[in-house]
Length: 265
Image: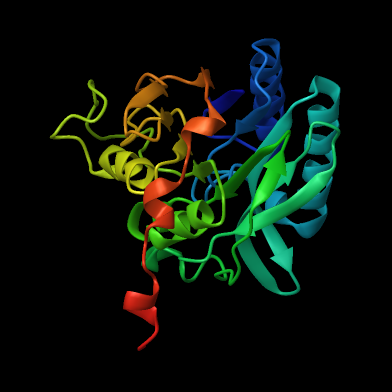
């Protein structure tokens, strides 16, 4: 199966984000990808990116999701689109899964917020799996995938061949220009991606914005920890990679003896 990972620029507005999304989805579909993942809080954009706060209204978010469904059906490709979303008065950081026929299959909430996000979003409380064309997968969002490996292990133990990881690191205004994927002087993020794949024997597929100074690349990591593909630093675009779901055995995740750690808590 071919999968795609998007590295879009920061959206200037929710409409700009949808334009960029449609362009990258079309490119991925032309390369025969069956599913594409976008970075964290892509619609309307991560807080502080400069979009108008009215773009985060429930009405605009609902309309944007309907547009994504139309784009998915038009291009015959499933889309993982991270969004801000309201449940009552609570604002959640989530990732919707939209099928290739434009149906919403559900969403995963970000359950482990970074301490700096406590005043932005309400943490979710549940994990779930999804399936597209026989590919079973989970989703873990940014901080929880980097610092809470349990979020990935849960999916692997329950049969996921892939865990998609929408995230955001980096800046357009300043930082270090990385040059080599996984270099020892790079921030730890790419090393964490490797470990999430290796320690569970699954694919770990991570999507970041294509900022000028990213601290991690959008990447596809194989079950043996090797980086199969990544977006060059400081660029925007979409990468498409072949994966073999049969190679994602989940062997190490399934050997984890949870009773040694949780029964006596």
